[in-house]
Length: 348
Image (cartoon, rainbow, N blue to C red; front, side, top):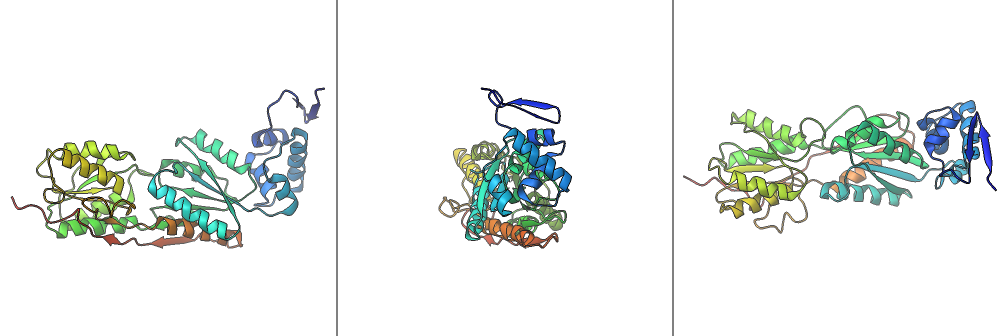
């Protein structure tokens, strides 16, 4: 027998309809999706009228997200959502590991939402899906345009922290001082006698990555030529192609790559074309990937503590959950690690 429910002029056949979503609850109750989420999670106060309408719609539609019923009774939320565009790239995965370890130690569970495209619709859909869980708060990996878009789509009253290589006063944020680190590694290459440093970039969260800003600052400060930027993808094979191309230019003596995987690809491409690193061309990276120290030659790089970055992000979120609503920042300065991939330019 088909059961038919009616509420506010809406009719649903439970025998034939697909399971209700949080958006269905919002539509039937005549409120926004964030309002439904606030009722489910208790993240902020909702007027008694709206709360009653949401709870009635939940009952009428048979909407039961995992854990929501228990959260309504206990008032306790023990889930942290991490929203990211990637889980496989070293910096992303190591940061998530740090978040998960810190959260688990405090009795929280971590769910991961992967958002593939930096469009407003995609970000909004991902946020609505995440808000259907009984969340304590959200941590956004703002390493790329997806993270920027997701952060913009979050309702203002959900506890959130951004993780990034840039510093911002708009939201609580755990960051690494990438501008200063980019300046340091370029100054090191210039101190070896290189007339300038070419730059291969990884995809940026906004118009320009902060590592790139540091690269430019150091060259301008030294009065050196600022070469045209060479963009790479996250795929190390794009570095191989770039390395082969740069090998044909004898004026290229030093290359700063946006991360270590791209540096590995560039070194391979240079080697394929008969150029030696560092005798002919110095190549440096960024991040201190676990393979950077055993690559040959060992890669000079900036050692970013990504697990520590994740732990600091959770600490900022926990402070909010404990009642501290002030926007806070946690920054660290990553050190330069000198290995064998950089040396003085060859005397011609």
